[in-house]
Image 1 (tube, rainbow, N blue to C red):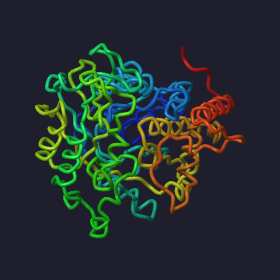
Image 2 (cartoon, helix red, strand yellow):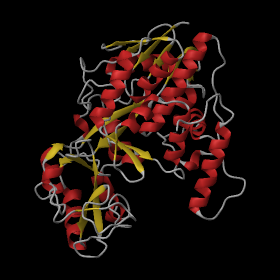
Image 3 (tube, rainbow, N blue to C red):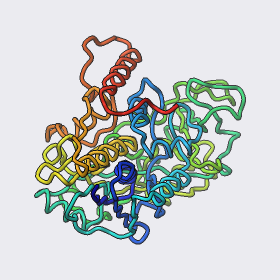
Image 4 (cartoon, one colour):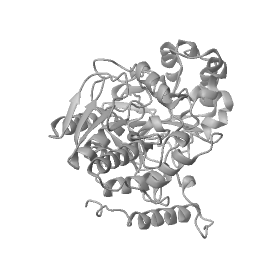
Length: 450
């Protein structure tokens, strides 16, 4: 039926390879790791998660939950692997990183229609191609993409949060609980919560705001103008915790450290603020600091984060760090089929197209894989109703204005407005979700798995 080249073995590239291979296409998947590292990845596994181990909400009245329902009905490989390696995380889907990526690697490596090549692609090949090289695209391939597009790639800086060992958390201070599901049993709850009183919070915020940071100048290939832009280059949806502290300490108290829905069993009161830690592996030995993306130097992370109640003796198995995320200006370059406008056998997918969030990346990989397979087989390419979450993401990245284009995650705000908008937020969300599922019925996919 034809051959397809895919560059990048992350979430989008792996999903694209699987979808095309399942439709009878012979796929060659290039992944440069582990021969060449990105500086942020730790392994050579396909689908390795760099930032959080949470793939977002599972709730049917949340945008992430709606997107997962659509991916489930489209038989997403990545979603199936995530569900098979899920960890307790309240209403979210969190995974054991290594087991999750290991299963994706095994599935892709053993598929009879996929050939996995561990080499860097420095040029865009001829013939049908999907570029899913991700936010950490190599310098050589970035140059090739820039030559093709006739413009410099856009980029922003993204950050990841630290991970600590469970045995180093002081559970005589911290406590287990999920928001709004407080239980007197100390073993209950999917999160470990570190409670602050007001004085502890004020001291922590002061030290955080004055801690030493890794300078942007240390990132390779940054122009003088970009250096001067400083924190403006950070993605608003994943700001370093110290940047939030710079803006206003209340950004923390009402953001990642909000105490709403939690009560400290040691005091019987709601804390002034809280840091939550989420399980990071199946063995339940590692926990990540939720919402604590950071660009502090490693010694400063240890000093400042050990001011957190319950983490005074924390063992950091991974420090937080920043990395450069590259993405193209998709509205000028791509159709909503994810085809490159001036070369229809070339597709882009994943974070490089300006989609944010793991499952959004998976969705674009799935669409690119199906459409590349359809192109090779002579079938019509697939379009999605804008009322679906997948369709809304595709429409945003291919129609946003230059002034508005920023990496976008699944959210109800990018869907077409309801004809009648209920006042209650939850009711609005349920109507958006119901309409999305109804619109999805027009697509050639079966019912979701049970």
